[in-house]
Image (cartoon, rainbow, N blue to C red):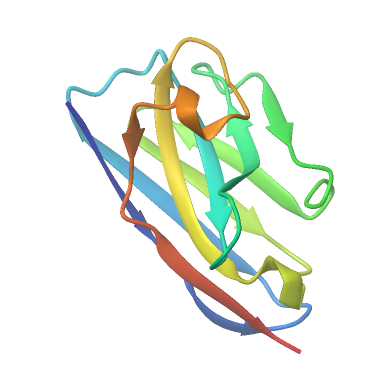
Amino acid sequence: QVQLVEQGGGLVQAGGSLRLSCAASGRTSSSAAMGWFRQVPGKEREFVAGVSWSGGSTYYADSVKGRFTISRDNAKNTVYLQMNSLKPEDTAVYYCAARPGAVFTTPSEYNAWGQGTQVTVSS
């Protein structure tokens, strides 16, 4: 069983930056792909970014490409999401997730989830 804990959410003005972190514990595995997702009330959870187990491959939703950067430090069992040039439409609860094997963009493919952290971007 893998436990994931997100940190780093908060309130920021449009154009600002935040860095989210996701610490893994329990039966962690550096061979797990990690993903960041986000969700707003009334909408489905959507893929934001993903990183392969090695950190060598990264994937982004078109809406965040060029503004967000995902990275991981396997020595610390931690994944990061650096969010720059934030927009009000980035406001959501952000979740990190883990799965064995490759990165998928579908939430149902992930078997471990954090509790989520709120990100609010004011205009």
